[in-house]
Figure: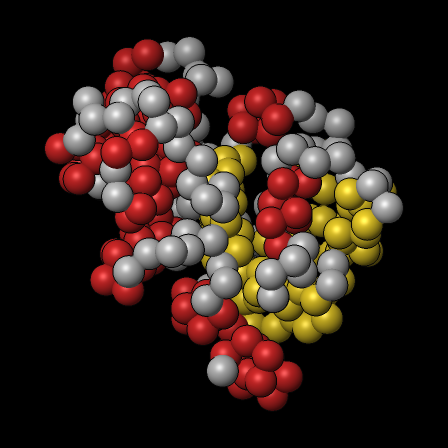
Length: 241
């Protein structure tokens, strides 16, 4: 539940993003409060991943504002966004396939300077993801899809984020692995990490999140808590089958 006594950790207002002549996002506004899991749902091409890339400063914003903890993200470099406390686990996992699991994780901490703390966090990730511990010297490209997704999330966590952007964590994974990944997502949230979740499986997203926003053709068309969205006839017909 949203706590009205708290300020949003993330406040996006009137965000517009173009890819050349194509408008990917138009006038998108939403908020995420500390401790929440909030989901963005919608069809492929609706603008969900673009929203996360804009927050990470990977794509250029045409107009609008993005405030994280009261600070503007609009002019920040991507590494400054990470240093500020936002980590992004991208769609397709994007692990560095020719580097080891260990090296991928250490790269996740590239903005940090305290090596003792980094190594302690490394062991925490190996404790959280035992399969990564078993494969710490293995090349990331030789891992299974589920193991690569675990690595992508663990790598993001190595920056000690307060806000975690998760893009399609279930994509291409077997149901048993998806359950494992989403149990980890819930555990992370219970430990205090705020999560903005993009997930093609709308039913799973709404079972996990407290609130959601439905994107269609680059615009937010419906908002509400997860139960309201799950019961909304338009959402059910379009995304819940």
